[in-house]
View 1 (cartoon, rainbow, N blue to C red):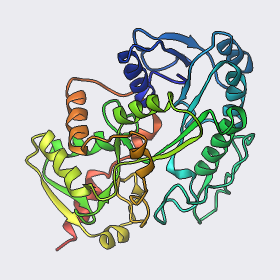
View 2: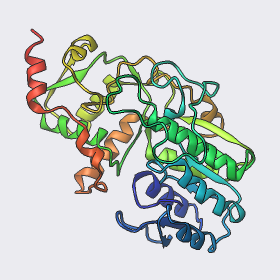
View 3: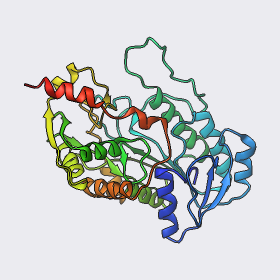
View 4: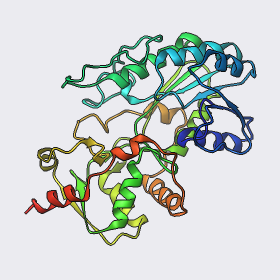
Length: 338
C-alpha cells in the first residue's frame, strides 16, 4: 500500500487485513495512525533512496496506490520503475478529472483523456494566475501519472481506477461532514438546485474492496468507479443527512439560476453542487461488470454520522476549510427568495 493511514488508503488496508492478506504500507509517518496488523515502512516517495529501500523489501503480489493525488507524474514514475521488478500488479487510484470533457459533458471509457507525459514535473499544465478559462491542471497531472504506471508496468499488469466523489467514514475533504453538521444545526437549510438531480458519489469502503479485487485481475483494467447514473439524487442525499442527524430543520430548495447569481463557488461553497451537465453523467458500467458494488448513499451518510458522533476526526487537511457556505451568506440568499 502506497499510503494506508488516511481515508481510502486506510480503508484498503482494513479490507485487505480482513481478507487475511499480508500488508505493507509505505508512508511518511507524519500523519494518520497506522492500522494494526500491517507492516509499516516509512519514507518519502520523492526520495529515490527511500523508494529503493521499499523495493528491497519485496516481492509483492500487488501494489495499491492511493497516495499519489498530489504527486507529480515523475514522482509516480520513480516509484513504478522501482516496484515493477518486485510487484506483479499495480492498482492506481486515479480520477475522472483525467477526461478532457469532465465536467462539461457525459463521459465513458471512450472519452478522450487529457495530455500529460509520464515524466512531467509538478509545474506541467499549470496556468497563469490571470487565466479565466477552464483549469485542467489537476487532470493533466493525473493523466500523466496514469501513463507513468503504464510506462513501468505495461498494459498487462495495471488497473487504472477513476472515481468521482468518494464519501464515507474518515473523509478528510469535508463534503459530507459539512452537510451533516449543517443538518444537525437545523433551521432553514439552503438546498441547491433540483432535488431530483442525480448524483454519483461512492462509499470509500466499496472503492477499497474493488481496488483489492482489481489486485487479483490480469491484463489492463480501466474503470470509472461511480454510482449508477440515476440511482441517487441530491434530494435523497440531503434527506438522508436530515434523517441521520434527527434534524428539525427545513430544506429550502433554491433554483440553480438563483445560486448562480449569488456568486457562489460551485463544488465547494455548497458541497456537491455543480451545474455542469456532465458532472454526474459518468458511465461506470464496466466497473459493475468487473464486480464493483456501491451501497446506497443513505447507508454511507448514516455510517459517516455514526463515525463523527463517536468523536472521530479525519486527518487534518487544508481542503476541509474550503467547504461550506457561511451562515450569513446562506441567510441572505434565503431571505431574497421572496
